[in-house]
Length: 411
Image (tube, rainbow, N blue to C red; front, side, top):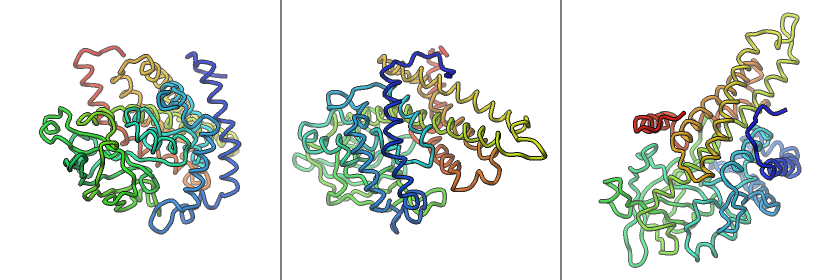
């Protein structure tokens, strides 16, 4: 039975069911057959911290299988050859992926094109040459990309980026650094954001452009793989550009107007991370409920103790609220509204309560909740990260207050 009265369109519900079937047919068997490779960090990552080649092969094969099945590009604009589905479908499907896969079957995260790793609205304004030379392979899942915006001195305030693209003949030469660039250790392409008009950029009036760059280009260097939470490897990279040559065909969108593309990506990312939080939170809550109904202590099932079950009731309340907020925000976006306040509230709330849901599930399990086998810790680490990604919770609260003070007080 569903607690959601929101009318999810039949075609979107069927799509989510289809993706679930795909995961069970294509992703789950890979994790069973190659369990050690995909669950033991010493095997998952190579010595330099990147995913091992065998893991990259699995990722690529999942993308390609999903593309053949029609799921991978479901939300890519029709103008690029995708399904053209909106943010409601994007949320519903991603929430299902994370609720079904949890942290154990993590290859499921490659069943649908992530806005920063593959084709999406972000690439809607690429040049004709880029469509021919880049998009065909990316749409088929053969290649992937990364999103080079954050820098050592420009995180939440991305307008402070220092990377420069200086005119050189008909093209530009890029010099600078990026950090926290997810998927960069194995990406084939990178959207690099650089200042092309320093005076406009200093006034926060544009002056930033986006360029689509092959990661194999001379002057493009993956300086290091960033390891977090004590892991032996990672999927975040620090990038360095030294006289990186780009041509006019590599410009994405209009010159000096690339920051708008960056903001579009971040908005899509907020829907994605909300789905991730709600999905993983539901996965964790269901695990905790199952365990509480099996584990005995002091002659009773621990489900009979309010100290155990009341926190799970709190989790259910919070997840329900986050789920409804997400459906509302996604629908507003699909109607063409900016929904700045609503999207900010949704992402900030969802990722906070998602992390709490994982923490409560670990507490319910006791010591076993901290083990690699259960997978709750890995999911908690993911959600702790997204309390910072695509706008920190503090930045989002700042945005909410600004909208409220400007008169947008409907809640």
